[in-house]
Amino acid sequence: MLTGAYMIQERLFALQDEKYREFQRSLIPGLSKEKIIGIRMPAMRKLAKEFSKEEEAAAFLKQLPHIYYDENILHAILIAGMKDYDACMEALEAFLPYIDNWAVCDSLSPKVFGKHKTELLQKIRLWILSGHTYTCRFGMGMLMRWFLDDDFCQEYLELPAAVRSEEYYVNMMTA
Image 1: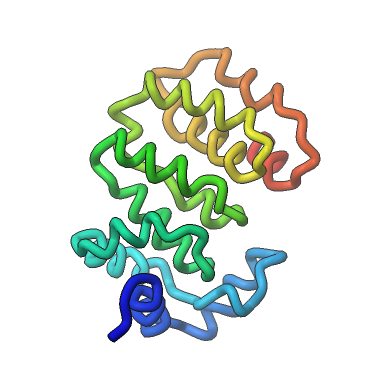
Image 2 (image 1 turned 120 degrees about the vertical axis):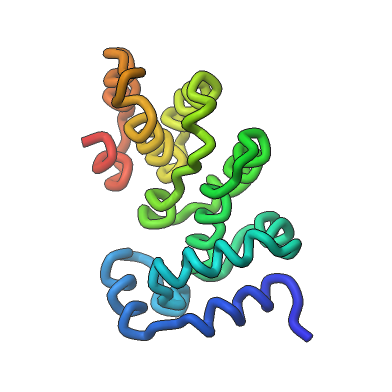
C-alpha cells in the first residue's frame, strides 16, 4: 500500500495530460520535462478540494521539497484555500523558500488575506525585501492583489520601486 508522498503522486499521475505537459514545459523555462506531470487546472482544483478534506493533506504540506511542479501547484492551492490566517501564514512561510518558478508563485493567493490586511502588509514589506526571487515576487503580487483598491496608498508604489534586482521574474513583477 502506498502512503504519503507516493500516494498523492499516484493520484496526480492519474490526471496526467501529455499534451498539456508539453504546453506547460514551454511556459516555464528551466524546468525539466521530468519535473512536470501535466495536469490541467480544473482537474487540479478538483483534486485539491477533495484532498484538503483528507488527513494526509496536512502531512503533504510538511513534505518539502516536492519533486514535481504539479505537487507544488497542489501545495499552493491547498494553502490558498486555508481559512485560518495563522495556519495559512505558517504553511506559506514554510513553502515560499521552495517555490522555484513564476507559475507556482503566481498561483498562490490565499483568500484569507483579505480579512487580515494590517498583518499582511507587514509580511509583504518583508517578502519584497527577500533575496529569494519568488518570495520577493510573491510579496509584490500580494501588494497588487490586496492593496490597489480602497486601501491604496502612494507609499505602496515605492515598495516595489525600491527593489533592485537582476532577476528577470522580479523585474517583470515590478514592471
